[in-house]
Picture (cartoon, rainbow, N blue to C red):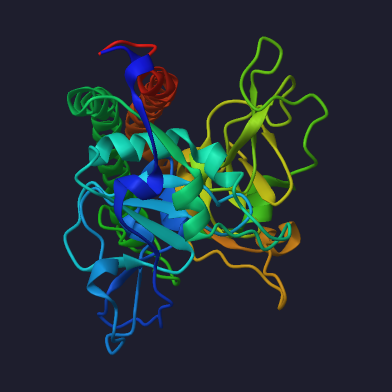
Length: 386
């Protein structure tokens, strides 16, 4: 069947349910899991960031509990509105808050096909937002009536969904491998530097002999990010190959690319506003911009790998009443435990191969995601014949 014979349908015609989520009362008690905007990024749903409602919260309509293949669309907020992800697995009662729209496919369309189609249309969905710059919203009706889907035959829908899913499945495998590798690093770190299991505690501070607490400012070079470079590209080009990082979580804070690096040493970045404390290891040259703190370790005291894991295990918080932020002067006063150099060197040599594998898997994830995002519009338009 030629793509010119494919039908066009509105989203409303293809769904049995389109609705915003609930307005929850959050609690530390064991209630219902609530997903929010922060849980939707990179074409996936993160249940790790779900919050719990008060267990006494009642009257949640049964239809608002998520099902396999439900499509979630961020419907408010600058920078997050329009993001799309689809539920692949679910093991307990979960819903979304009122900033997220649930899109549930009817039997008239392959649900996975529809999910990938809406993911492809994220820019179009974002363009439907209404309201002021700081208060943009996407109405359920506007989404349902405006978004159009080009429909191939049911068999072609299935083949397209399966083709794209193969790439997503490999991406998921790599992410799980990386989660396991980082858990191995964390286990070694906890054993050595939190529980001191391989070492005898020999001084008055109940620490192994020669180990001391320092302030971060004494053993690192710390600086705040600057403005966006004048030479800038959203994607890599022949001139712009150096990544620019911001305080965002999406894609490890990748903001764009430029031509000249500001930080050339292996280092660590920490988000200073918004997602305060979000920590990343940076192994290649880059440019940090505003709201991001860069920390370069002094090699005579510690490695970037140790610094990264220490900060990941630290409770990093900001100051301020209106809008919390992490300042460099305050952060420099944060304590960090430094073991003797031989122990630091041994730890780093053990975890380096694990981080090398993590980096290789991330690079493969990026290539697979790029291939997926290139293929989706070609499959959805019929340019690639199934």
